[in-house]
Amino acid sequence: MSRVVRRAPLERASVSVVTAAVLFLAGILTLVAVDLMRTVQAQSLAQAAADAAALAAAQELAIPSGSMSPADAARSYAERNGATLLECRCDPGSTEAVVEIERPVHMVFVGPDRTVTAWARAVVGSGTSP
Image (cartoon, rainbow, N blue to C red; front, side, top):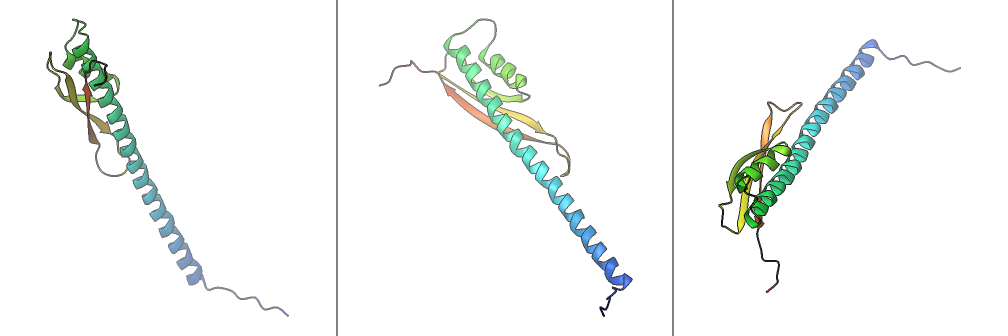
């Protein structure tokens, strides 16, 4: 004859509580991971925007179009990439453009939205090697 062992209702309830706690913790960790990945993605996009802005400013320094200043070109490219130009050291007549931009990060779980910053430098050269 086989014997059936029955668990007490309290034992089954404690397993349910532990399972619920583990699932809750897993959900929290997932949301934190989503915010971390959003921050990493925003930093990458900010760097791309800074690179584009610096190259646009350097192009205006090298071959002025006359329609906009190097800083205006950098601002335009930063905005096209979802960023805001903070600084552009790209004076007409210089041979380099250094820009700094910021881009918003929309958080899901960790507090309010934040921003990431990035900078890039582009140098206008003659195209010949020494």
